[in-house]
Length: 261
Image 1 (cartoon, rainbow, N blue to C red):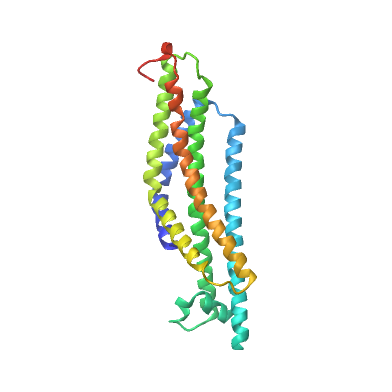
Image 2: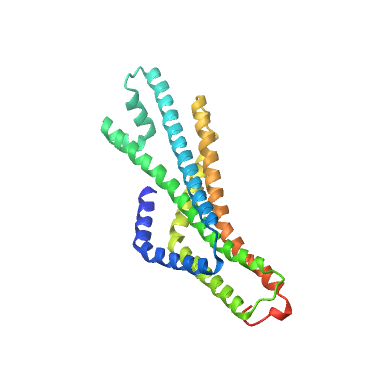
């Protein structure tokens, strides 16, 4: 999964400069008309930081609990077998697919553990990336909706509605472009999350040998469900915000109605 994620982000990175320029141009055009307050920009930046910190800290806690749960299981197994090399037992229990076919060496175990660490954070970063893109796009629609709702019930000239139409079309075009750019990442994210949800449901039928295993399972499963729900809900806000202009258009007074509406 980590390899596929890296390839998809490398593919996106090749197109990112032109995409970033298009996004910047869109924001500049919208800002010129909507005049967003500096406080709103700070709030969006703060939201990005909070989301990033929360997701990555929770990912670190989950990975730490995973290591602790594996270590305590290896400790119990080593005590039963009378084996003094706990780390060898740990690596062979955690990565049986690797050390069933290859001789154990600490450096091999360390490398596999490091790759597992990178895989965990690349998986979490993929979901975080989708959340942040959704938040940014929804915020642009929210600015347009705020402008539309501010004139509800008022008579506005044709040029004002022409600007609103152009802004909405620009956002719709950007939404389609974002969808085409990250659709592969979205598919991988949901398929990976669904796979691990099924794995965790299967693991729930297994007895938990100690308290650490129980804590790790509950935290990991809860975090997985929460992260999957967050990706879905934040992505859904883009669609929800895009539908909000409709009530304004339906409530336009007769005097303001024109071909632009």
